[in-house]
Image 1 (cartoon, rainbow, N blue to C red):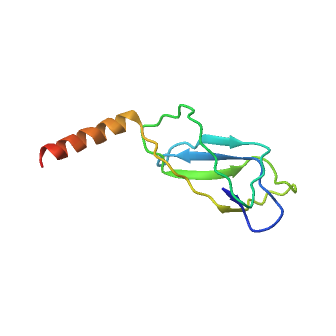
Image 2: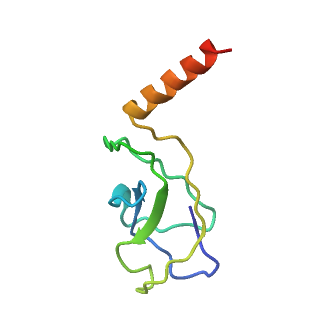
Image 3: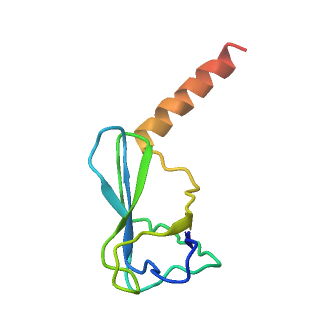
Length: 105
C-alpha cells in the first residue's frame, strides 16, 4: 500500500476489512500510528482464525483516525491484495471434483 499524490495528509490509522458476498465485514488487519509512505509498504495479514464458509470477494480500506495533518482525506495510490483464503470444507469439495475429473480422463 502506498500514500497518494500529495506530500501531506498521510493516512496513519486504518483497517483492512473483507466480506464474502453480502455478508458482514470482518477486520483482517488493523494499523495504528504508522503513516503510509510514498515508497509503498507490504503489510502481512495475520492468521487470526478467520473462518468463513465462503471465499472472501470484497475488500475495503477504512480510516480509523485523522491523517497526519488532522484531515479525513484518504490518499492511497497503490492497494493490492495477494493470496488465497479458502475454507476447509470448500477445499474438500474442490479436491473431490478434481478426483472425479481425473477418474473420467
